[in-house]
Image 1: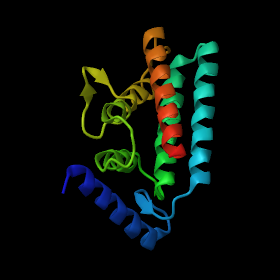
Image 2: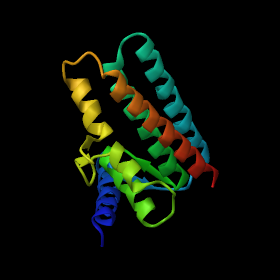
Image 3: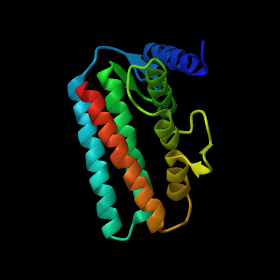
Length: 170
């Protein structure tokens, strides 16, 4: 069994155990596909994307590292919902999307997922994942992303939103 499949299985068992113990979960739950929930996640992704642009206008690009990450992350949650999953953990979400790619259930480039997550690789071609960038700017003291990084992340988010919307239509 692949590392991805092992991670998904661990996430499913973790959620099951936590739901029994406390009624809350920080793993992965399999249920019925929910296209309405998926569309809600896309709406939230677009909302975060718009907030990202608004923050740039106000000179708060370092904060937009978080909004742009969550824009992309809600796209992944939308895909998960389409396939009947609810995630309470980022690593579990990344593993699930990786598994759907591996099983050829979605057309989502693995390199695109790697740019978002830090599941399998720290750097892709020497570039930090958006998770690492978000953490750097959320917890660090920098007050600006810089125009090049901002534009690159905005372009990445547009690609992720478009890809997720196409997956939901299929």
